[in-house]
Length: 136
Image (cartoon, rainbow, N blue to C red):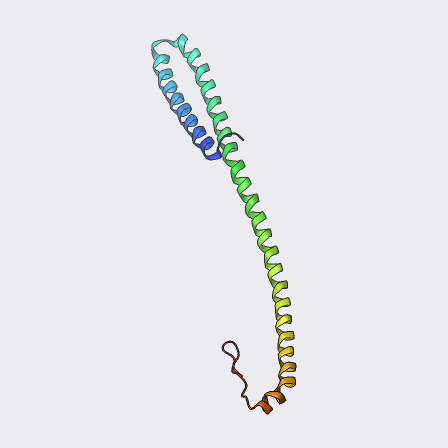
């Protein structure tokens, strides 16, 4: 599509308004002509019929110009929702992996404390308190 959908919408609305005002003007002129020149009335009715058909075409063009961008927007929103759902699944899986890693790390620290505890006791040092997280 060469034009921006919103520009196309504005242009279509402008054309539809112009056609509507032309149609109303023609209706007024037709009423006057029906009184002053009845033979001209047939020509003006044909023109009026063409203007109404043109207005109907513009309205359907306007509907088409606005429907497609809206439809595209809805499709993109659906795609975004699917992507966010996949991201949530990945986050959930990652959360499980990180929780398992934390458990293993805690087990490794306990094992290390058992091995180093007697050495630190002989050296006369006190265990260092954690600076953040759980306080022991």
